[in-house]
Image (cartoon, rainbow, N blue to C red; front, side):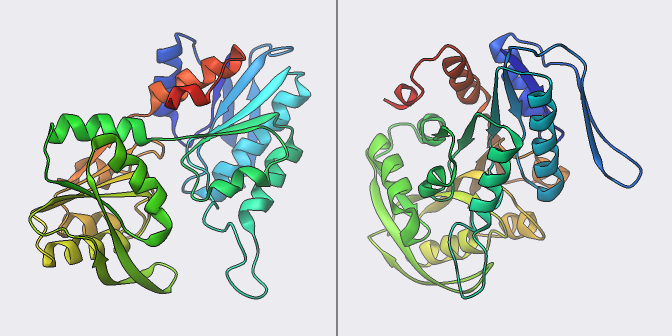
Length: 311
């Protein structure tokens, strides 16, 4: 197997390579003076099983183009199989028509990856599970829940006052999966979203008085939903409020919003490269998903089951 890293999250790719004891394939992914993307692979990949590690996080369009051009370069170099490894799948929130004359951009991106020449896709915690059906090639959707559960047990021990909270109705299945693993109660935040990026908490479904609450979500972008939910939980008597989120997009003023919020701690994975603001924030911490992704890549290469990772 061969591993190639784009520029979106080099540290994660290096951690995956270290776990697999497989050096990253030498390749140049650079820009011309007008910012066109240029890719050159410096090793022979003919007949090889190649994995391209590239999150389509900020800048999403540049990183997506890097991924597509890497795939095309490998296809023209006669790689036997090309797997697009996307720890964070950008455009996943555009998975349906939200109104008249709007796109389904997640489907468009899936088509682009397919037509570029990818043979399969591996990603983590898709915003909507049905996005797997947007691809006409095999797609593996990994889950960060086992890593989160391990960290929660290390942080909270065998506490019996934990309540896992879904910040919206759509995330109940995800929150329930974590609650079941740690034998905790479940609560739901009922909110109304007036427009994209702006949410208003309505009320809490479930008893959180005197409980230590853990919000579980897949993406934190502006952090408005999480911070509003944390304030509502504290107002209902929660002792502490922490949050575990798969993808820390944290755009704009999100880091400052989290720092000044009622959240005791926000824990994200390293699916997206951390900014300097994230690294120095007092109440933001990251856990690695490199071993999880690396083990999945090993199983794909050896034609073994990936789903058994979560049994």
